[in-house]
Image 1 (cartoon, helix red, strand yellow):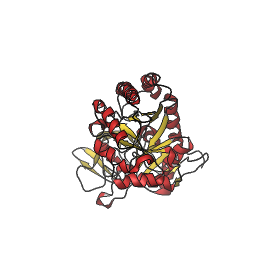
Image 2: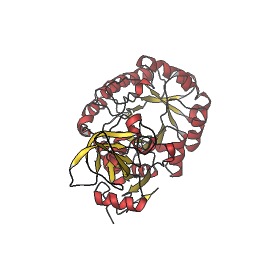
Image 3: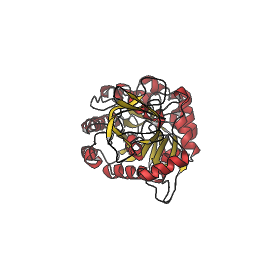
Image 4: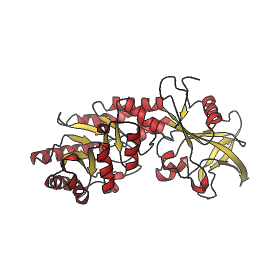
Length: 384
């Protein structure tokens, strides 16, 4: 079979028959499509795919083959890209709080650009001198985002230049500033506010000659469709493009998309392993749940569109539950589904981000097998 469309029922059934269940089916053609959409929406911005939402080799390879860059946050992610032979000059390390061995491991691999957001973290780089460069992360609180990352990371804007002075004093080059307004942002207003503030910070720091100050990292947060449709990405990014156009030409702009690249590119497939009628509702127990691929409903506050592959029958009030012996392990209630049988398949859409990556094997139910398809033209699918 060539040109697999893993979002079509017949191809889903074929892949389950071949690889078993539960599955996370990653469509590398959609990874390419999402990357290209964002590249068109943010021309001139170097896109560093953030591995965190889906740290899978096929996705990393696909992004790199598209000319993309990578955003790493842990030693494990550094080791993954090393194993794939990725040029470390295409990577940045963006975790604001690092163990010394994390810094050493990244430097040994060839990564040179790191992120820091406080004086203690800046001082960790004193011993590495000219080997490392810093992006100083600035906090812009964004209560409108689904996940407000500036609550946990980033310095206050009024402290950013003082932090740059400290970096210069300990002999570390300040490459520029970074921010992340939060994940699944509702609109781009906070991006614009942050870009304008960081533009002023770059100007102030350059006047004091505190480093090369030639880079602005605008983070991620670009939204995707779940149960509700997100804004068209080109429309969403229009205010960002306008704000970036005011930057000096010497400033390189980078971004850290994760969810936008990976989220729409994968589906989760689970199998009904049993059923029961409770209080007038059919309960269907799947071989995947909140402790597995649906972990993003807890950790990422996401709710995935789910559907049955069974068609053409009356719809009944239904509950989808995960396989573990924990009562919290319920995926969705009050769904209208046909009456399902053991072996029927349930598909979750937009499940590429923060699903398999954050899944556990609680109760000894194994994580979903990842199947990557369309890795190259004519690819028929393979497990990695």
